[in-house]
Image (cartoon, rainbow, N blue to C red; front, side):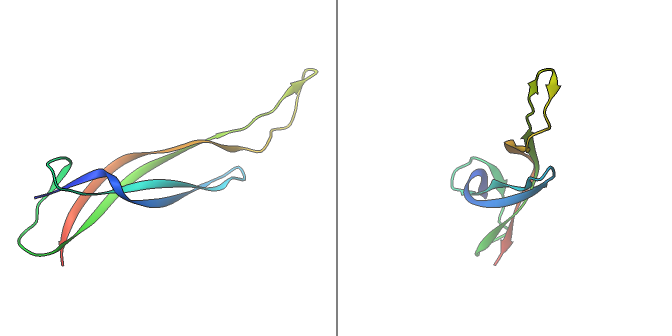
Length: 101
């Protein structure tokens, strides 16, 4: 048995397209790594040999924008340019598998 942990390891850069003149926003998604303890998802090797970890990780990105305008003398100004307020992701599904080499 090998154990996969979602934390640590390499990071994948995910680019999310956003409207309102923003273009795209980049998120760093950690891919995880094989651990030596009993922490994480168990992945069973089918026999002796070398294996490569393959990962199917689905995430749901959330990008929040903020946009301002002011009110002077009872009149609203036009909207300012939108900017990224926050960005995050939620892990929807993780499926680690081992591929025999």
